[in-house]
Image (cartoon, rainbow over all chains, first blue to last red; front, side, top):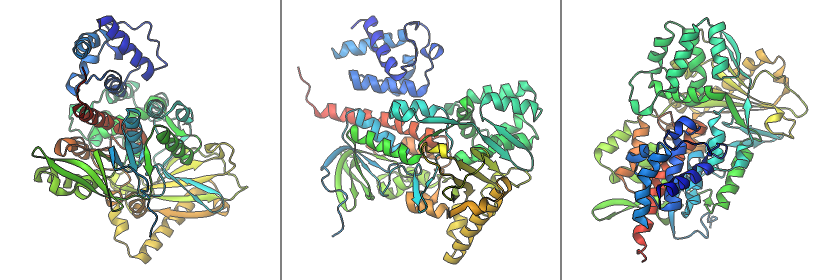
Amino acid sequence: MTKDECRKLVIDIISDIAPDEDLTTVKPEVRLRDQLQLDSMDFLDIVMELRKRHGIEVPEADYTQLASLDSCADYLTPKFQAKA
Amino acid sequence: MAYDWLKGIEEHYDLVVIGSGLGGMTGANVLAKCGHKVLLLEHHYQLGGLATWFTRKGGHIFDISLHGFPIGMIKSIRKYWSQDIAASIVQLKGVRFINPQFQVDTTFDREDFTRQLVEKFKVPAETVERFFTDLRAMNFYDNNPETTGQMFERYFPGRADVQRLLMEPIAYANGSTMDDPAITFGIVFSNFMSKGVYTFQGGSDVLIKKMAVELKANGVEVRKHVVVEKVLTEERDGRKQVVGVVANGKTIRCDAVLSNANIKSTVLRLAGAENFSPEFVAQTKAVRVNSSSCQVYLGIKKGETLPHIGDLVFTSDEPVFSSEKLVDLHTTSRTFSMYYPDTRPGSDRYTVVVSINAKYEDWNSLTPEQYAVEKERLIEESIVSLERYIPGVRAKIDWREAATPRTIEYYTKHWAGTSFGTKFEGLKVSMDLPNQLPGLYHAGSVGIIMSGWLGTINYGVIVANQVDKFITARKRAATPATA
């Protein structure tokens, strides 16, 4: 799993949670909240989908690590690699 | 022998959900979609909790609490239920206030409220802007001790009229008062102000039936007429944990329980004080339940019509707003929810549901004779009040009936018949529950901010995430790792 692949998986999840959003122009270094209409419930949905689809657990204390696509990749990629 | 409402159920479920309010149903649905085996138990013969309806002769359908939720419901229903159900949510544009201080017609959103506050109430535009912006930025984790009344005084000092315009509708929505933490007002008011007031077109009956179909499709086993008597615990590795429930006298094993009952009932009655530390029990006992409601249901004869006087009409004869007077047995404050034929497309019927905030103690202390008299008074006063806005309406009414906090207690088993859950401190107890007794979770109307349709649905999902984490970890621990 590379960081690029990890970003792609996160984008896949967001596209299901927020189908009306255009995700082709999302800047990976900018906070998702600042460029998409995502609220705290949507971030909770991301956490649940990571568990359901990929068996990855994000403890509550780490929710802030999901702020941007880049921070997601930095935080989640080692978790994916540890599973493989 | 009585019919066995639990006939054919399995011996073990991943999760048992107690109660089918919107929080319980949503939690059940989300967790079933996560792949867990879920059993949902409801004591009543109908699902929905307070999001429900009843029918009466003459072809009347009365909705208990349909009118008015924020636009956020569209997104939550789409994500946690279905696009089909979300597509039936429509805006209610006619919100009216009629009281001795002012008459206002509004769409109840930020844009229109700003216009009214500036033009009609002569509040500086800059103050209104600052109020809305600050409110949106309010955060649950800030732990701000300021009350709603104190906050109002900061922005609108001495303006009893402005404070009434802001507080009165929210008091009907979630039972909060001027003395509750400002966040209990701020979150709910901001949600409404975002885009106005919405409702479900088709009525509560259609909504709940669609949800029931969805639950079944996702594999939730739903049983009605089933009273959960006890949450069962066992000690494992030196710690008590949930192992099942006793319902209708039968033991059902499970790994987790999600209680959609009142938080005090969940801790003190269903689980029992013996399963908790004395501190936690004391904390739970100290949680104040919120006030409750009365409703008057008026059915309009087939063939008769009503003029459009608004969808939600907040009326009062009180000279100024007071949280105490609003729940007084003899209050003159009432909200008319007007149901025109377009509530249920294809129907030509009209109904009026009058909501009045109330205290359980006032109604519970009455003798049977007094109770009947007071209910009749409530109905009569509501009709007299409605006649001021619709002259001659009395002659068009062919069904009249009242519900009180005692009615709510009977049908929902809510602690002290509350219709608004608990005060703010209830949320802490609810969130802390699984730390106190592993496997026991609570989602329901707590802390005021988790009340109302949107609050309770979202809280159901927040707790479902915790339950999913717990059950998933259990399943992983039970499955030997494969190479």
